Image 1: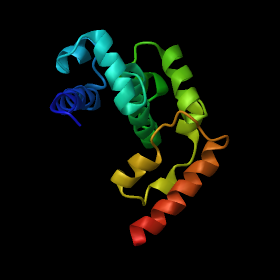
Image 2 (image 1 turned 30 degrees about the horizontal axis):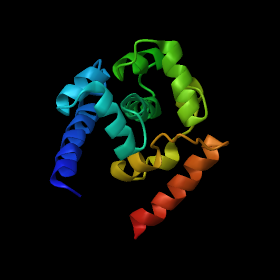
Image 3 (image 1 turned 90 degrees about the vertical axis):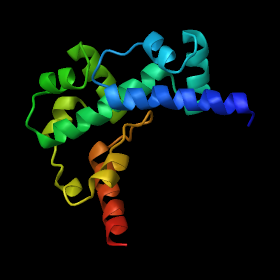
Length: 155
């Protein structure tokens, strides 16, 4: 890697870290590009080339990941979770959640999540990370993830 590419990577990481930290805040490509010290177009192209998804897609994945954690706790309604993670439209949030998770936020919230209760949080976070290719049966996928995590936790 050239020194220029390394500098670009550090700047992209700064923007990605901003998304990870401030996912609940209104963030747009222009603000993220400023954090990366790049133009919006260049930032979008470089972010996608480096991380395999657009900045908006990465932001929404982070929001859905956090929403899943809040819904598993069951203390908040779907609408409250939607606003807590920075989404302004319940319809758009529900649609994106369903695309990434494979079931509606309401169905996800109602499901039994006891299998993940004994899994350390850092592992549960990786196991429940939203995917662009959700499984056909989310319940079975969570069971498999929890079983795999259980064997990791015991190792």
